[in-house]
Amino acid sequence: ITSTAGEIKDGADKLTEITGGGIRVGDISGGNYLYAKSTGLTIHDDSNILVDLSADTLTFYDSGGADRVVVDTSGVIVGDESAGDYVQITDSEIDFYQNANKLMSLTGDALEIYSSGAKQRASYGTTLWVGASSSDERLQYDVNGLTVFDKDNDSIFNVAPSTATVKI
Image 1 (cartoon, helix red, strand yellow):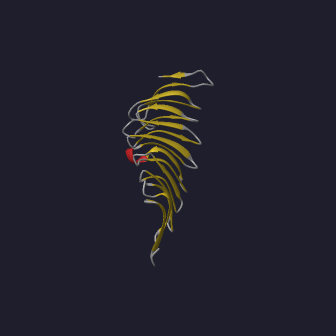
Image 2 (cartoon, helix red, strand yellow):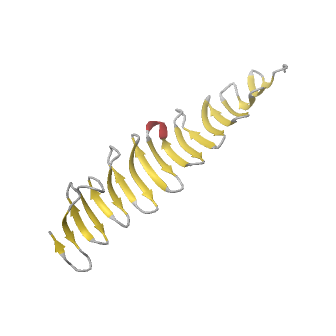
Image 3 (cartoon, rainbow, N blue to C red):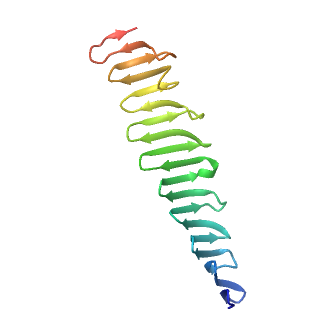
C-alpha cells in the first residue's frame, strides 16, 4: 500500500489493485479481471475487453475486440458494426446491413429492400413496388391495382382491381 495505490496478491499473482483511476478485481496478472472506474465498468479476458458499461452504453465484444452487441439509448446493434455487418434495432425500425450497406429495413409500415449500393429496390407495405425506385421504372400494386411505370414515372400498363379494367 502506498499513498496513491494498493494491491492484494496471492504470491506473485495480483488479485486486487486500487488506484486513483479505479479498482481492478480478479486475476489481474493473467489479464482476467473486472475494472470499475468513475466512467464505467469493464470485464477483461486475456487482457481483451469483453464487456464495457460506460455512460448510457453497454457493449459486448468478441475475443478479437469486435463489437458484437451494443445497447444504448438509440437502440440495439447486433453483429460487427465496425465491419459493417450488423442488425440495428430502434424504436421505429429494424435495419439489416452488410458491408456497411443497408440491405433491408422493417418499419411499422413496410418491408423495404435495398441493393448493395444502398438504393431502395422494393417496398412491401400498403403499396407494393419492385423496380429501379419508387418514382421511375417499377411494378406497383396498390388500391389502384397492378401498374407498370416507365422511366419517366408514366403508367404504361394498369389492371384495376374493382373494375377488371386493363389500361395499356
